[in-house]
Image (tube, rainbow, N blue to C red; front, side, top):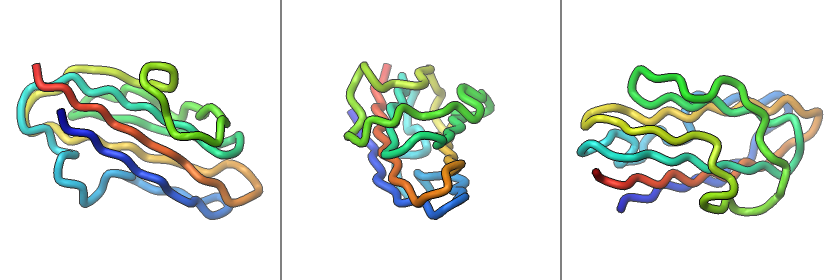
Length: 110
């Protein structure tokens, strides 16, 4: 089961278009169940999750737990994707301070 993770510091009003950019398994190799879990250090952190052509989450505020994401407690999106579809996770810092965002993506072939 592929697993992708990212720990990112975001500057004030920082935006990242795709946290998974450059990671090999961001493009599904076979039909798979995709679960995305995310947390943040502070409030006002927003995530957008896209798998293939499906927008799963659009600017959802992340829980401010300041801890690594847990499965299933911190899952914010879950879907089934086809081989060749890309997982895109964008984030935006809406806080007046720098912040950390923690991401875990669980990929289970079906």
